[in-house]
Length: 606
Image 1 (tube, one colour):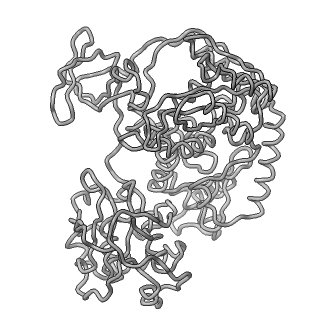
Image 2 (tube, rainbow, N blue to C red; image 1 turned 60 degrees about the horizontal axis):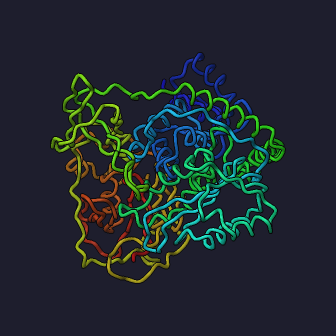
Image 3 (cartoon, rainbow, N blue to C red; image 1 turned 90 degrees about the horizontal axis):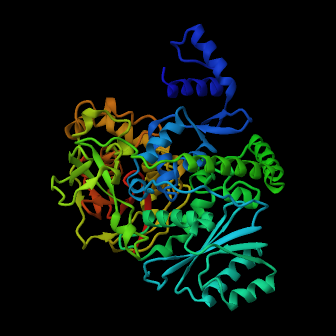
């Protein structure tokens, strides 16, 4: 049995005290023994770690892939350790660390912005005292945005690693002092702050601020930014995260500062083994996916939370645990720095996909928002001296040749979308040609009257009151749908009832419709689709087959805003493709599939 099957049997035993009919006595004994580390609540299975803390067990590939995307791709593309620590605080499955490792290693954006490895001199760690006692500050020159901002002021706490960042139009002493004062009035005044010798930090205005607040100003050595190393490292991380989330024009980075700051603040720090949020506020953060996962709170949840708060206050406010972890990490970091040599990460071979170091970024000013690596390319030839000839993916040979030391192996992710993870390879060719919508089409979403037409099959929880009919443009307002593998059916549940929680009933109705109209499904998707799709299992992602089937069942056209070619367009799934019935409504269901792996319900357009 696979680990997922074992977990399903454990859940069955804990929920119903029963076993599958084919189980032997030995099988039952093993399940009873394994179940001691688990508990069930509602429709979820939880695993208990050695500290008695509960982690939700994820039992299918689709949800695992969705979580990996949510915790890495959607949270600022943090590194392997941070992504793993955030994910493992809430969820559990076998090989979770290796899955995180593979997901992060194969992330296109992370590979193109990762550091160029080089050796450095011995490190000299700064002693740690308490939260917000000693902070470092710096300025980052950035491309000018549409709002006129050209700099970022960064402030980082040496103890908790809590960061602050403010977009500035200029780096005048008045602008910097005003931004710092705003931060200090909110966070408190530190005993010590460090900066370089720039005029924006060493001036009469800053001297006045220092004297009036009683803080000590430590100035780093000239031309040696490593003296203020924590802030310099955060600056690189902040720039990398902004590159990954802002537009291709890189002129809107100031719109994403708060978003990436939050991702960094809730990420587990390798040195302290805590997140900056936990250390600074002595309480765990609740965010994004987590707040939508657990809909009910049990007495055990409350007890666990109280224990966690007590541990946080004991370990963080006193500071012993954080200090110990940071000192150990500083010692390890010094050791690694001394032993690190300039090496190529992998042996480059002809035919491999690689990325090349962006020498242009390293040698020119104003390039902080450029990617560190370019590509991918294919290695066409390598000379005995290690000079490589590269060609593009469209088979065009590059004129410039590169030393293999400037190359790194590119790790590609599977091309299979999350929606297709539970489908067989035989279904790859079963694709319906959807219809792109002409610009003159109108946005005319479902309303209360449309809901009432389906009240015999679904109990309405809340009637819709959306905007009036207008021109169909890009989405403006959406209902955020829970990403647990059921997002498409949750969208339909919301459309029909005003609540996402009827998704299982919606799935059953759509699957029943498909089995009752086998010939129509087989005509478009092949003879084996219904048997191989696993669509009756909760968490199995919907494909175009289910979209068309639900459109036919509801007798309502469904529009999906998704990527088509190089741009996003509205794709129409007509109700009459799998149905002979005449369409009796001018209303439609509108969904957004921006990421390619998740659906949200569109309530309004621009």
